[in-house]
Figure 1 (cartoon, helix red, strand yellow):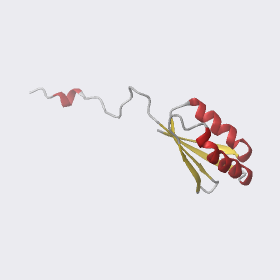
Figure 2 (tube, rainbow, N blue to C red):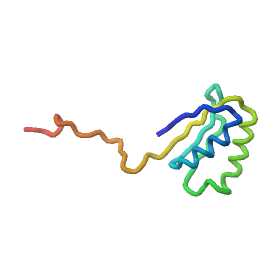
Figure 3 (cartoon, rainbow, N blue to C red):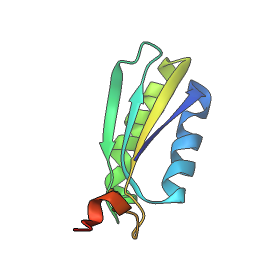
Figure 4 (cartoon, rainbow, N blue to C red):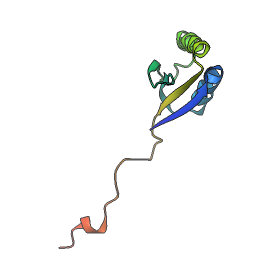
Length: 95
């Protein structure tokens, strides 16, 4: 599942921290106004601490350079949800 947030550069770091706190985040991409990807940060459980410092520095630098950008968030699907379609009555085979 993906979602996109448009934010001004000065709110970039704050919005990313908010998104990470919400959980289930697999990957975050930051794109400029033209849609060009500036950075992609893969996230996994437990990688939000010290290992994220270089990414935070890069995100801070991007925030200083761009006026507006998009944050594309790829989330894990919540457990219990599947992509399978229910079987219709026509597919059950009556005869």
